[in-house]
Image (tube, rainbow, N blue to C red; front, side, top):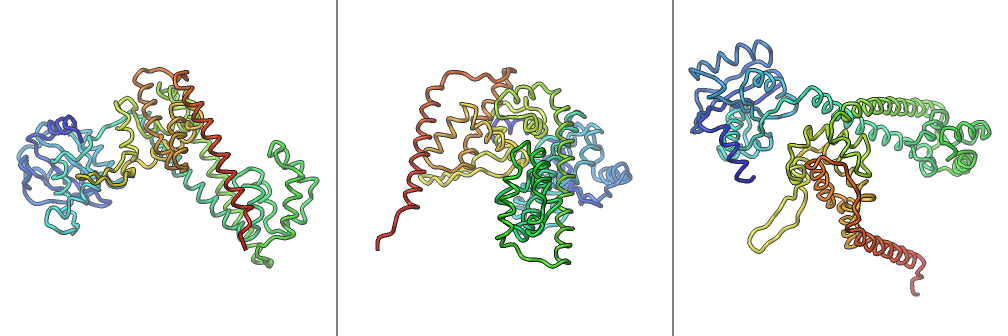
Length: 447
């Protein structure tokens, strides 16, 4: 943390009483410390209800503090799960400054207090106030209704995406048991596969299908990517399938389970489409949305999800702030002459981490500023995922610069020669790697 940020936080808590609150489902625990860090009175609990907020909380505070106003008192709340939202909104509505303390900060502060990891609500409430007094906090900000709506949709979209991946994995696991060859011919996440799996499940069912009728329907669904040839391949695979033969009861059970997974996939897919439209409707009202979509590889959905997580892109004045917020900042280990391995911290917004990774993966194929960094690392060592993550600073720098200048992305000719040279080297490298792989396969071991 730089000196300027510490100084700004110091002005907020300077010579002020801090009330630390450990939120819970039924009752919140609170402790009060003065400007010197000493606890005032005993900690107390108050119900997480309207009566607890408006009556019990202030009754206990006034027993300890003669006056409690926004000029003399600040509240520090641990941002654990979703338990902190209602109390922070209530206190902020009354005009108080609310500080958010990370649960990780509280966890690491426990053994420092009394050399043990014991965890109690009164202890945590005191530690939350103490950690906030040391400057380890974020200021609670109330966003606009449009920003809140966009953020809520982004969270829901991420949960549906994970749910979709889970259901597809379940469907794949079932087919690997019943008819594994099907997965090598048709990916299970395509409309063509869904159409066939609704009607057929076991290999003998595929042997009995009507190729003439199904070929026409399959060609229409797949836009002529699949048809009679695909069905013939499935029939041949079904004749020699290694799937487990099943009796009538087992077959019926698998059919019911498969129908359930397909129904869930279609339901989630429909909800994701609906959420995407609503995300796009809200995001296109933000000027930065058009800046992001002007970068090749960043589509409407990714741009909307990115803005939903960062809330206000203008508040990030440097790309490293975005890196840290997305858990992409490097965890350094340097001491004396020793320099350890560098890894990303993974401490931050995991949804934003996934979004930036997908954005970088797409722009690494199209945008020269990102493509050059990716190819340079690929030529040194082929590690796609790590090299994509290593290329994220270039993309974030580009986004912050375009936002600062409020202009869309325009591809420049400067550096095009460097990119062409890298592309040629990468193509030659791929040909050489492929040649070595083939040579290894056809090599006959010496007798």
